[in-house]
Length: 362
Image 1 (spheres, rainbow, N blue to C red):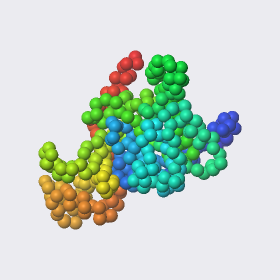
Image 2: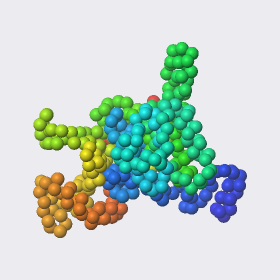
Image 3: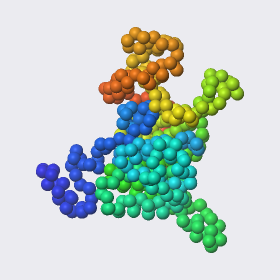
Image 4: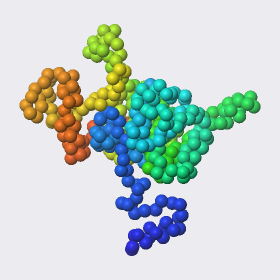
């Protein structure tokens, strides 16, 4: 069989549909990446401390309120903007403003912002981008925050007619599914990238049950990557107790990939956000230094490959920040070993949830 001729026959019959040999397809290959300032987060997404999020993907950040979802999305948009993507923000809750975006380095003069609590209007926005042929080379970085914040226009009609407003979750979830599919079309067909936030409703002490993401089942099934977040406070004196811990200096986010179509899921990463200095790019890398045997730990003492010995983890982090050789070593080590910090508890819990869902359908 001549595969090129078959491709041409299919393309002729299915006009307007992308038809290609897989290895030659521009849609099936991600050639660009949107890194975050957090090396460890980049690692669990792509297996590289430098690459981060592949383009032509949609990533959903999930977690309880104030768990850093919007901040991480904004940081991703900032890097995408640097790479020539046009940020388009669909804000369902009115939580984004110029001050917030500028704090993370965004050029607010070149961002499309929409306050859009109604899912049907979000679909109109996304379909307009899909149909826009004025600049065929334009790339977009879509942000939807949050998916669970959408409502249907029907609540306005009911209010005007003084009807009792009834929940219509079935119809709303179908509309959200349609809207997310439009976002995916932009990501795949326009060499673009998308990010969304989803509230997790449940036990706030855990990473989140992917069955309980606001927005229904589509919020779990359609994204290429799902990152769940759990927040801890960073204190001035973390080893002390009670009030002696002092001021809260920032937030430590434990991030875990509940789903990842491009790298093994259930990887766990540390993301530190200092309220004054911003993202600590090196958070979590001491663990990798020990795993890779770049550093050998013996109690509170750390021995480098060159024989140098240092006492105290805080001193080690400061040394690593000035050690570019380590970053090169770590990148090559990750590439050669395929190391992944899989959280087995979360993996097993997720598998049990999937099995229970299958049994329920029987």
